[in-house]
Length: 91
Picture (tube, rainbow, N blue to C red):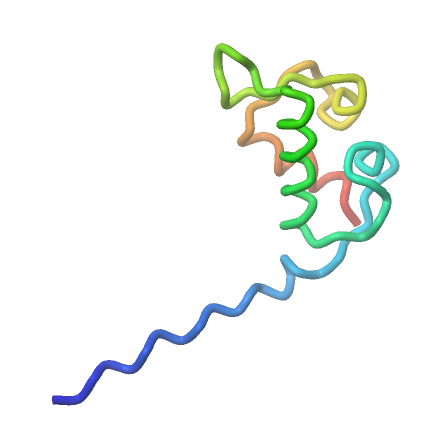
């Protein structure tokens, strides 16, 4: 009885790994160095957690502070809107 071949190892998508330059508004939060999308997302979440910006009543919402308000364009966003808003600030 032959063994099934091992599943091919997943390779990261090149589009996700390409370093992108943040806009000045986003750079105020994560720094000005070009980063892949995955790292941008990690850094934004580090900032949100460090400054305790998740809404206490509904943890899916993120409250904007002075640095995030220009990025979001409003006082509160859901975590599902976050990626779309951040992508608009990457080149």
